[in-house]
Length: 469
Image 1 (spheres, helix red, strand yellow):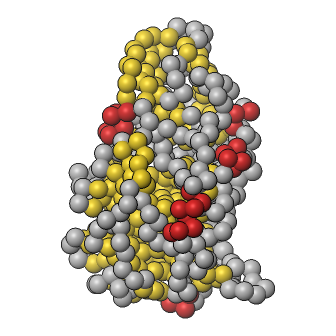
Image 2 (tube, rainbow, N blue to C red; image 1 turned 90 degrees about the vertical axis):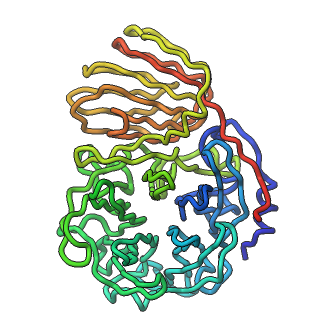
Image 3 (cartoon, rainbow, N blue to C red; image 1 turned 180 degrees about the vertical axis):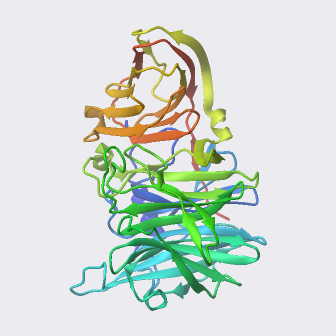
């Protein structure tokens, strides 16, 4: 059974390598996936995440890892707060969320069990338990309580019900859960409660025409009075240049009453790169809606060379969300500017080579809306023509090839380049591309047209280890 002593021993095997990121959070060893339990409590940001320290491929038991920060520059690596140590979560402490109220942090998560036998673990043989714990400090947790198990969910569901997220509206607590029906239709279950312990099923949110077989990681919230449902549909077929990843991530706008009649907008992708999934949002004490995503994706045909070094995946930069013209815009939070140093500003002539100062930088490229080709790093290209932007990777993608975005016009790109990742924010966050990339050269920029460049080297996060109080 996975315990803290075992995790401590595994983390002693940590080895630095050329692919370790400088301003992104990574697992000390092993595997990282979904961000969990994101919140700010008494001034401290708590960033929990899915963590499998035994294996860079995610096997051997999953717990929650934990980082804290007050400024998004210095982070503390905390002990694992939730371990697979009960009958309800023996095969993994899976994804969940946090809800802060009255000096208490309330957490809900999915406890995973796989029963022994000849099961497919989709329609039978799996227990997905909605679990509850609480904390008065964000470090030490109460005893686990099982709120709901398979028999408590609607009878037409498969064994895939997971990823609870809680919010409050008009003195009522609501919980949304991702689900897969026996007919392989993805949906989100909606529950309500008066006390966070006893939950009543209300209805499900789904499209009129099936859209994928499973909706993971639901997150329902409001920006400027508009309800938004973020979710990750699995099983959506690629249509032209839309839905190019194996699993999707994105959002619906919701109008109406989630307890009665509602209307969903079309589905809009949140990120168009190769490595973005399972985003989760929270509101901090400044009132910002902040999103952090998994800088990775499951079941992909491409690879990460970090596996040979004993680790895999990371978390994206924290992004503040806003709503403009019924579109979500996302951009790195203000605190990211604290990493800036060595500012340069210049104009780059057409076909002129411009060598960056380091592998870790922020660069804003301003240009006019013309067909263009921009070379980034060793073998990444951005090509724009006929209102389609193409993000193209070569050998440094380790099997990643092309992704596309339909976009009417492009005025600027802001590029956050780390040793083995790139996050590109188009038109100040109207569209985003996130990907892992693996080359060791100092990046060189070149374009077929005149561009203005605003450039900063970026410093590294400071990661410290302390014993939680």
